[in-house]
Length: 152
Image (cartoon, rainbow, N blue to C red; front, side, top):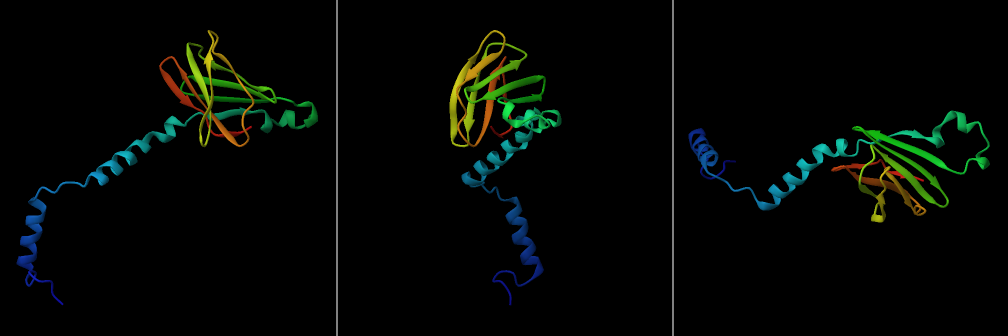
């Protein structure tokens, strides 16, 4: 079976050369999808704040009676920023270091839940976290850092 116009190799090569020299516009949807995919190249760096300490995983605390442990301690460290958090039934108390003017935002998968300003020491207070995974987005000193998702 032959394709019309491609009866010989020469005809096929002529059409191929013509196709390669023509300026073809990229459909707008393709260009937009390419830009969106390109933005994902830094997602690991943006979400790099790894949980460097979680009191739930602390072997020393595991030996104690769980009934006496009322607060969960979490520390996130990356890129010279440390976010230290204590979660209790009353809410979330934390500190962002190095201290500076800024704000912290508590989010769930559906979006921001609560926001608080950082004081001069980098401290903040938030209400009780909603059930399910949450994360903190900290804006301090012109830098924005995002913690891992954590179920508290």
